[in-house]
Length: 257
Image 1 (tube, one colour):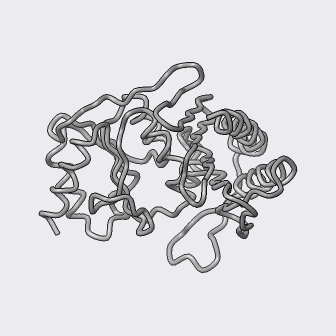
Image 2: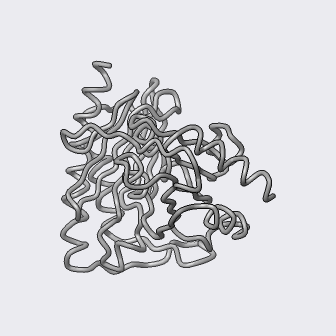
């Protein structure tokens, strides 16, 4: 626990370094280009690259033995059990549209497993940190809503057209109380704070989900894959305000496939 408290404080410094690169670029506007080889427009900006360079430099200076796995630059293997997962701008499409809910995602991995997560929303000046059975926004302890039934749930996905089978999303949406779209990693922070009850997505990469796991679980929610397990390698993620809600959605997806 002492190690994680130290690492949590350091993760906040890493988030501050990213803010210094992203926030002013967001305010004044930042040109975007499509990533090479992407089938569709997958934007990247100098804010993404500058923030990741700043985060990497801080980690390399403080913890040279730690691994680094980022979105924009090559992986640096760990010399030991610790590594950092970095997504400098999660929601780059929102960033280039001058919307405020993009985030920076930082996770500490222990032997490949995310044990500490940080979701930073610079424009909103909100920061969510979680590990173990605890999560905070600033000094406020976070608690998921505990919603246990899809019929009562407030549900979000970033973009339903990202689903391989949009029928899966339609089945969940029809059963839910209400739905919201377009929030990327910020939706998981809202779930941890009790504002949303369910987030379901697919096509996520490790830098997209590593930071989310400790925050959601620290707030008393549950996060797993679409099959009811914890194998996120397929990029299909369900985060729920309770284990009962998560399991209901897993059953619903299984019945619709």
